[in-house]
Image 1 (cartoon, rainbow, N blue to C red):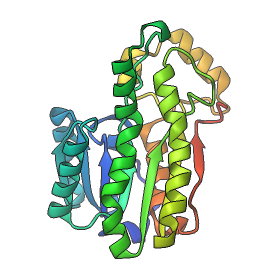
Image 2: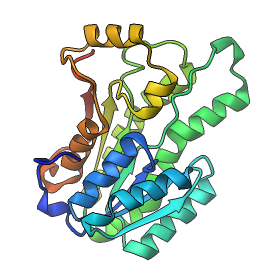
Image 3: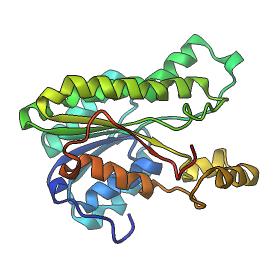
Length: 255
């Protein structure tokens, strides 16, 4: 994360769990929390990329722990969360970042593919929140940040199962905020715009698409993982202590 990022004293020493923290936006979030001196646990299916993240944050001195996990497997997710808890302590910050935005043709979607897309983009967010709830209740506070997307708000085609799942994140967020609020647990959602991670550049970006993106955005620059991580850090901190059940669009003014 770039120098000059705000420091949130309330994050120091708190245990954070980030799903999908091994690359892209998730890696930026893990790095951001490490620089805040939080105790950072993260899960990801890619152990090789995650090892690079662990190496990158080693110099921060923050406690850190990685668990390889396929978040589509709820039992494995619960086990990984328990291992993070054992390694670092009770979890009071959860960032539900893991997702896959693979494109697909509507006519070719099978019931099995649909269920798999829901599992990787929506289902795990609920079960991760359920798993950390006892820790947050015992602590008397907590912050959960769920990841949506601007794709459904923009009416983007070619990924209907993804956009359906990501639109549901808003309903999930508001319901959890209502249910968890009595325990002083805040639940918010972030809807990133097109963040040009290495994966996005490799798979989807073309000169023509980039030109259209720059035309659509108010800000004429590429969005980075750090842009999203900064908002996550704020929402996780006590500076956002009165903010819950909200949906923050971070898209450079695209919509």
